[in-house]
Image 1 (cartoon, rainbow, N blue to C red):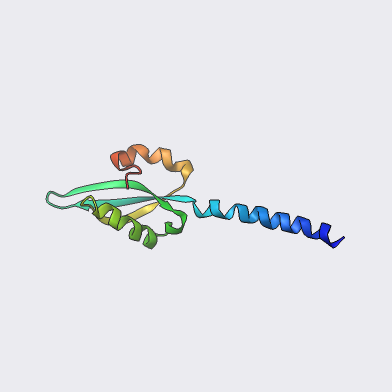
Image 2: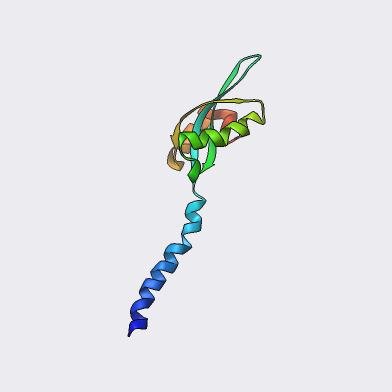
Length: 100
């Protein structure tokens, strides 16, 4: 009898653990501003980040080297966008929509 009672708990635990890897791959989208000097150029963009990078400080740490590789200087995080609002921001970000 004890084995049949343990089975639902084991099954529930196994199912819960099966979804843990999917959660770690969740994405977040950061709205940011960047610049270049000589001549001064500014851009607004949206970048895909991991869920773990979905704070202003973590997003800055992730975006700074990505932008620097193309000569851009990170300025600020404007905010974060979820997938439901993402397409509505595509036009505003233009060429910098999910580029970095």
